[in-house]
Length: 109
Length: 114
Image 1 (cartoon, chains in turn green, blue):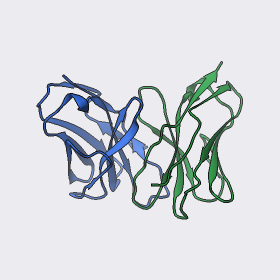
Image 2 (spheres, chains in turn purple, brown; image 1 turned 45 degrees about the vertical axis):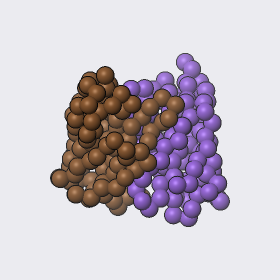
Image 3 (tube, chains in turn brown, blue; image 1 turned 120 degrees about the vertical axis):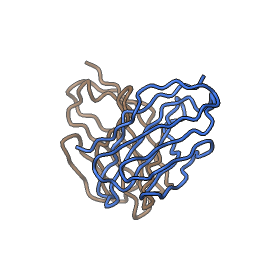
Image 4 (cartoon, helix red, strand yellow; image 1 turned 90 degrees about the vertical axis):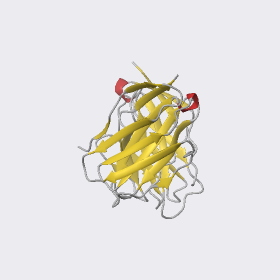
């Protein structure tokens, strides 16, 4: 499975935008980029995914580099409830999600 | 909304016991997965199933088996529980059509083997 690299931790202030980066230089042409987050004591929660084009949904935006070797999850206005571990995952055709260590996002009031 | 329900939130079992962890999803998803999550090791895939009666080993299948007799239910079996199987177990499901969709996870079962 192609690997992703994320910073171990990031910090943000409430109501400010947050840009969470992910590098995936070995991505293949058919890999989708998925983002999940995990709040304390809960299972992971799907956030967003994309293939080539930027994507928006009610939770976040996903910006994908033109060469697809990196992507950025954008939370437009962080809230305290966004404090979580965020995982960037490449999903290929075998349905498997392989989780890395993710980025621990801390949101300061 | 899709729901994935795991039968127990917390479970304590004795070494050597046979343990069943049950997972049910209510949205007719083809694919179901079992992960375990441990501090410092993250989430690791144990087994997955892409259809009834079909199963495939994940990254750490040793000591586990699974059963999928009905589409909505995926069971994880610890034949003889050991203390190193103390962990948080997470079930997930996804549709096949499906590069187009995310996975839905249950809330987890925290298993302690004593």
